[in-house]
Image (cartoon, rainbow, N blue to C red; front, side, top):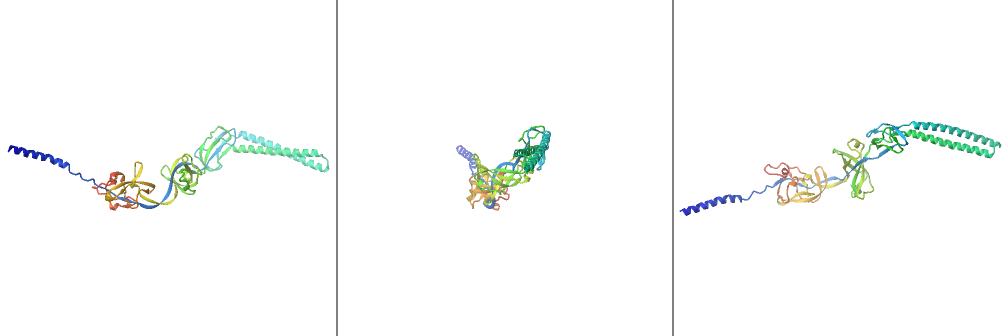
Length: 383
């Protein structure tokens, strides 16, 4: 009896130990499938664009300098940023010595006029005497020569007088055109030389965007095409292509596209010297698109999750193009009948199983209703 009792006790103990072990070996519940929306390729007509960056520069910048030599700047009337009109006085030089030179030259001119008048009168009288034979041919030639010499001296004196008057006029530095002063080196009291730059003027306050385009794109750029320049504050300035550079840089293989900006660009936050990005519109073209939320980047490439049989997803590399209004152009990688995960695909792995929400199936857009609380969704995983 004692031996039988011991055997029963051992059997019961063995049964007690095996119960937890068998319980631990029970199969774990399967991972729930994520509920997702499905998106299909959609067709649109979008503008083709060439995106570029480049500097904003003045359309034309005039250099305004001194045209007389050795005079002192007596007055400077404008500063950088001032809007000026054509002919407006910008600076004035000391003109005392020039006025004295003008007065002296005026006197010399009067003297030359008197000498020329006297010589001309003597020549006329000599010709009257020649009719009666009262003067020799040698004297007649001498009077004619004196008259011509006096006339030449008069012309020289008149030219010298005009030159001094021109110097007097050049003591006033005026704006050659309407525009905005963009630089100033003029300083009151400085003695300037002829040709010294005093100001720079942005003519008409017109700016242009010099977009740097790759040489492969340049043949598609034509004068008159519309362009959009993105301001630093997020706004957009519309422009128009004026011309395309005839050459490209040998090192960068880029060429310049000159885009005229409207007059209001200068007052809307766009300044000369800024380096901004923008687009040149090349015309409309068909686009096959998916929602931007369906495309994700991984290891430097763009991918989508294509939904296959039994809801199993396949990570597929795609080539993307234009973007607009929350859509992205799919150039290559997705078939016409393929359905892709519309949102949250980045949180899935190749081979995961998903459950498609039929009501959320869309063509080129992702607008899904909320999934039941008991079923996780890819969008919820993103949050």
